[in-house]
Each structure stands twice: as C-alpha cells, then as structure tokens.
Image (cartoon, rainbow, N blue to C red; front, top):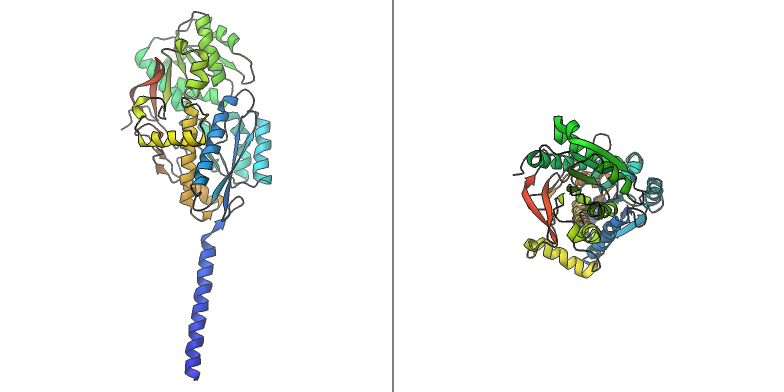
Length: 411
C-alpha cells in the first residue's frame, strides 16, 4: 500500500513538475517590450499629410492599406498590426513632437518609414538614445547607414549619393564635355546628391559643374533658381527637387524654350504626381534612375509579384496612382518589415527587432530583377542598386545594365 502510494506521489509530482516546466517554457518564449503583446504589434509612422511635401502622403496611405491586408490575413504570427501614422507637415520640430508622442504616449514597439531627411535627422539622436528601432527610413540619405554610431536607425532605399554617382557616370560616358547645372533642395538630402555627383565626376567636377543653386522646401516656386542656373548656360540640368517643384521645372523649361538634358531624381519621377501634371508632351527624354518595377510597364503584366501588387491595389488602395513609384516602394518597404517581424517570432523586444532587421536576404518582389534586400550587423544599406531610365512616349523605358553601389555592372 505504502509502495503504491509512493509510486502515485512520484508520478503526480513528475506530472506537476512537467506542467510547471511547460508553463515556464511557454512564458519564456514570449518576450515583449512596450508596443507588443500576444494580440498586437504597435508600429509608429510619421509622414507629411499636409504641407509642401504632401505628395509623399501616399507612402503612409499605402502602408496603412498594406497592414490592413496583413491583419485581414490573420496578422503576423497571430498578432494584428496597430499602425499609428501622424502628420508632421515635413516640419522637423513637428517630427520631434510626433516621435515623442508615438514613443512616450502611444508606446509603439518601433518607428517605421518616417519620411524625409530633415525630419529623420531631427529625431535620430532621440530614437537612438531611447533605443527605439527606426526602421526603413523613407529617405536615401547616407547617414541612415551608420550602425556604429546610430545602431537603432536603418534606411531602405538606395542612397542619394549612389544615385548621384550613377548620373555622373552616365554623363562622363555619354556627355563628357557637358556643362552641368544643379538645382537642389537645400538640406542634407540635396547635399547628399551633390556629394555623389562630385565624387562620380572626380577631377572633372570643378570644370563640369557651372552652377549649383539651392531652394528651400517652404518656397512656393523654384522659378528664380531656375533662371539663375540658366544664366550660366548649362546643357545638362540635374534636378534634385521634390515632386511639386520637379513638375514646375518641366513646365518652365518649355516656357523658356530651354532644352537642356534634364535629369530628375528617382523620388520625383512619378507619372501621376509629376509627369502628368507637367505634361507628358513636355517630359519626353527626361532621364532618371529606378530600383523598383514600373507597375505600368507591360513587361510586368504577368509577373507574379506585380500580379499580387495589383490585387492589393484593387482591394485595399483602389484610388492609388499605379504610376507612382512611391507606392510600389512603400509596398516593398512594408513587406520587408513584415519579414523582420516574422523572424522575431515570439521575441518581440526592440533589441531582437534590430537583430532581425540586420539579418535579411530577401526578394520582396517589386524590386527590379537581381535586386534583393540584404543587411548585416555592419550593413544598414538594404538596397544598393539602380538602373537608368528614360521617359519616352507615355512611360519610362529602362536602358543599360543594373548598376551596383560601386557603379560596376551588377552580376
């Protein structure tokens, strides 16, 4: 009887210890920082829904629609995304205010796709001191790739300096004696393009660049700046301006009957936001650079990734302009974040979010063939390739090879 009782007691104790161990393991697997729970993941976003850069508001709208789709599909590892997006009017002091609101009041797990170089510059020290991931910044400034000094901030798109070097390479090969005028936004983003352009031109920079004229994002027009550049007689105009101003420049060139080779930056080549308002007939021959697929290009009609993108647009963002490259990029940026959160599993700490963000090698589908999103603890530049395009007829046509960050042909 005693032996039987002992056996029962031992079996019961073993069962109890097993249950305790199982419970401890279960709870041990789920690690959360503020903004994450069994039910949801809070993500903070700041874009200019108003003000001079409001053209880029489509980025926030695309991402909100994307995360709604993810939630309808069951969320990420069973957790719904709570996407909180605020307007800063592209005003850095307002960006700081909204970032503090998201971190200290809303208690988001991370910031995602905050738009603009100046706005992100204003919050870079704050988010890093608070150890808040600021992932896949919607800006191509070189400073987002500095894991040593700012380990909690990471970019996504190719840098403006790389893009500037690509334009320099194109000009050296095709217009070696060109006189170059540059219109640029007078902030870190515009200056990054200038750095890349000068680096790419090398010893010829001083003799080739005859005018560099900046404008403020708050300016109503860039007409006076354009007149200044024209006075120097350049035969190439490199237009480093926001979409609103790029459309102005295209129209004004026609009014002035001035026909330089016009190069516009990739952020400002939207068909609906720039080309159509400026006039398709006025935009023929403009040069730019791209890293995403063009949703209006017939060659991608049967491409599985673009079929999926079009289905998303049909259901979740039917009013979106399918010719706007910003929407395609926002979709790819959102897919990248979803992959990061999937890799986090049940360890949704901010430290693990950054660890997973720095461990990517994925194809998000909407990038040009051969371009993958790649990161590592020492590489916070997920995308480093472009391809040149020219606007002909009613669409952008790609030419040349895919170029990597060092301007060699990508293999």
